[in-house]
Length: 187
Image 1: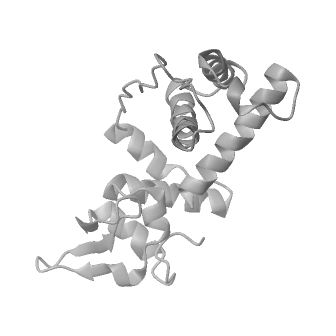
Image 2: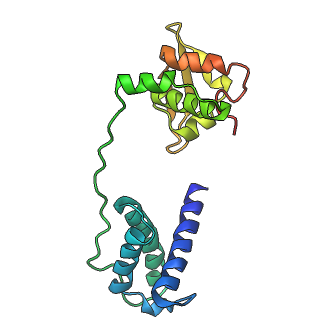
Image 3: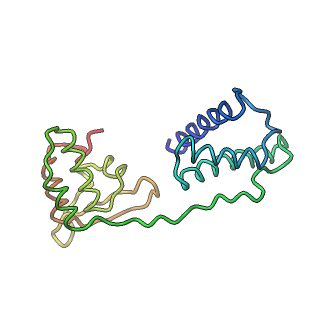
C-alpha cells in the first residue's frame, strides 16, 4: 500500500508540474526529454519544496515508469541519460540522554499528545518504526528465558523476524497501556 501511495503522490506531482510548466493537463509521451526531467527535478525542489532525497525518490519512481514505456516501444529516447538520481547521505543524530529525559517528563494538556509521546518514546527504547509499534499486540510481548520482557514479531518493511529485549522505560510504557489489546497504538 505504501508503494501505491508513493506512485499516486508522484502522479499528482507530475500532473501539477505539467500544469505549472506547460499550462496543460497532459503532455505527449514523445515530449519527454532530459530538459523535462531536469525541470521536474527543479520544480520538486523549488516549487514543491521537496528535499533533495525526496525529489530523487520521486524521480526514481518516474524513471521506472519511463523504462516500462521504452520496453513497450512507446518512447524511443531515454530522457534520463546523464541525469543522476543519487541520494545524499543523511547523518542522523540520536537524541541525548538529557533530551530524551525532557521528552519523558513533558506533560501535555491533551491526552492524544501524551499518547503520541508514549509511542515515540517506546520507538526510541525499542528501535521499532511507528508502523511496527502500531501493529504490535500484547501477544507479541513474552517473557524470555532470561526472565525479562521481549518483543517477538516481524518487521513490517522487511518482513523479517525480530526479537527485542525491553528496557525498563519501554516496559513502563507497555504497563501504562496493559488493557489495550493493540499494546500502545490505537489505530
